[in-house]
Amino acid sequence: MSPITVTKADEIILQNAVDYGDEEVSLLNAVGRTLAADIAADRDMPPYNRVTMDGIAISYQAYAAGLRSFNILGTMAAGDQPLAVSDTDQCIEIMTGCVLPPGLDTIIRYEDVIIQGNYATINTEQVKMGANVHYKGADKKNGEIVVAKNSLIDGVVISVAASVGLVNIKVKKLPKVLVVSTGDELVDVQQIPSPYQIRRSNSYSIKSTLKSFGIEADMLHLDDNFESIQTGLFNSVDAYDVIIVSGGVSMGKFDYIPQALISVGLERLFHKVLQKPGKPFWFGQGSNRKLTAFAFPGNPVSSFLCLHRYFIPWLLKSLSIVDTSYSFAVLEKDVIFLPQLQYFLQVVVSISYTGQLIATPVEGNGSGDFSNLTISNAFMELPAEKNYFKKGEVYKVIPFKKILYHG
Image (cartoon, rainbow, N blue to C red):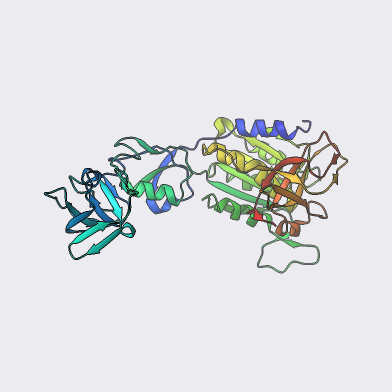
């Protein structure tokens, strides 16, 4: 199978997104999940004519007729039953959040009132009918949608859900994911590696990234032996929805992952993408999309890039979330890249004082130099049909950290 373009890889991956269904979770466990059903108002919002300023409640008709001094009937705090006035020259001292009393329609804030004894005198002429009142149903009517399904649940959505009495929220199910690392040269983090070994890091990076999406992935390490790899994968295919592999997908004699994935029932949808880093990337699925496999190169930068560039957009589409994980930035200096491959340049993206996103290239030593990922915060996607990229040109960037202001 010949290598494919990044565009074609995108197309194939996104065409094979998977809907894993819905489930209900408790209100406080829903943060970061995707809303699977609309949230509707269970009554008008606000549910009553709500006072929005501390002050006095008056009848605007009395004010329009020239009255400026009002007899204070009483005081209301939020949650109190409304007092009833018997005359238009009466007012009520009232606090933010109160129900607007019957017969009164305008709130004059304390800053515009002088109170002496039982009388409140208005000392401004800037009074409008209905001032400082949030009317019943002004935001939403009973039964109207307040949060649409497929929204990402954050603190605001939790607040709205609580306000309509939802104890549990219906969310999109997350896939069960297994992260597989391969390589005889890899030892676990707590071990002391020999001079010819290194500690496993890719699987921890992948697992921690997935955790930010609410996925608690399992991890498995397999030695560079076809039988053990095949057995490990075979024992996993029925237990997981997604397998993410790091390593063993290139052209080496011990790169058994592509063959092993096919042997346990997955169909190869592509192998190798015309890009750098990450060219040996393998993608496939089982019958009826019961299992999806992303097999990334073992080089740390390649694995990290492929996760953010391909898996996360696939996950977002599977969860019906609109992908906003990329942006566009201005290249800060000239770059030359001669191979006819789509180049993912490590950059530091910052926000200039004029509001532009500026991408500054980070010099590195190839796809094994993962220490540069601590310096950079995004990949800039440079198209394969060009070799010379000039300062001031604009290209797509895939951030993997927060972008900060830079003066």
